[in-house]
Amino acid sequence: MDFELKTLAPAGAATEKADVLLVLVTEGFQAGKDPVSRLVSAALQARDLEPKPGKLLHAYRAEGIAAPRVILAGCGDGSGKRVQSAVQAAAGALRSSAAKKLVILLPAGTGDDAVRAAVCGTAESSYVYVATKSKPEGRELKKVVIGVADAAAGKQAFHRARAAAVGIEFARELGNLPPNYATPTRLGEEATRMAKSHGLQVEVLGPKEIARIGMGSFLSVAKGSAEPARFITLRYEGAGKGEAPIVLVGKGITFDTGGISIKPSAEMDEMKFDMGGAASVLGTFRALVELKPKLNVIGLIPSCENMPDGSSYKPGDILTSLSGQTIEVLNTDAEGRLILCDALTYAERFKPRAVIDIATLTGACVVALGNVRSGMFATDDALAQQLVQAGDAALDPCWRLPLDDEYAEGLKTNFADVANVAGRAGGAVVAAKFLHRFTQNYPWAHLDIAGTAWKGGPAKGSTGRPVGLLLEYLVAQEAAGAPRAAGGKPAAKAATKPAGRRRAAA
Image (tube, rainbow, N blue to C red; front, top):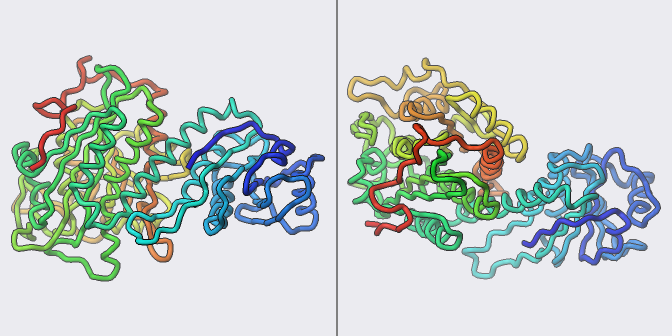
């Protein structure tokens, strides 16, 4: 979808050639003498339109307006959240139409948040999954013009929003692919393809190389599947070599049966979404190459399936992680933390500025926060505040949960350094405390996206969250300026071989 930002007043919007003109109407609408203003004023006076978010009024061949179809949409106070609701309602109504060009007229006085919401809201609502359909429904909407009072003033927000839309769609498409398509091998291929197209550095390791590194916890989860594991490293280097990178770690379980501790069969198909963290990391990198911020970012993706088999790991097994810590497996359906802990240890070699892991980790987080906010845990108050602010700005919110040491009491065991589960109480926090053990050497945050990475029911599908949050956070870090790695030296290389060369996957 092609987006354009254009300076447009209501009078100019009336003459703009398009299939549909969408006019957003605030509670404080000021009537003018142009055809668009007259139409809005008449609709408000007749009470056929309310300026509340989500309220729509359709008009056809309105006098003095070039677009044959006009949609008037209430957007309340004109804030980003209200604009997003209005645009999503209107764009959703157009999905079954043959409209190819849409003009969205934002109210005068709206800010950057409204521009961002208009772009991302339109992209989200017009997205259609077609990859595995024999007769795919075509996506008709090709061009979207965002009309604002001053295009020059909104240019930066527009470019950021357009990059976010590209990254979110990339993540959604990966998340929606069926598990026999989106295998660990496929994720490695997608990372390699992106790197070659956009000048990134990539490394994709197979099981033999992962074993040589010492990721015993990660490989134990992969043992029960015929699909080989992959460990993916992506490098975006937009700043100097001496600037410490931000590391994003994405859980890449491409299908989760629960292993020997098998899940109930109902809705198990949705476990293809268990690679939502990996998809969000890849989507964030897709957005980064659009924006090209002056920042260094590393992406780490441990990816495998969790399957029941004669060779599967099982309750009672003792695993040795890359950190050297031993782990007693009490439940094989708590596998995400077992692949992430090795990736979090691996992240230390980059001397990171901060590490953020993203994972569909616990059903307990869904119980706590539903599908509105992602759960967020952090060892650093500044990092936590930055993520909250980024989520609010991107309309991709998170909520900070505690990391008190007492929550880790249930992870004690007689047979290893730590167990992989405890009791039911505080499950999301206990999982975060497990990961916390492997993050002692850098500022760390954990985003539990089990409730936000996908939707079920009639709207079933990947959401692409939290790409918007992550991109907003990274852009803010560019503005703040990145510190140099510890000791003023450049960050360490990813492995013993050059990171720019793809190593053969076993």
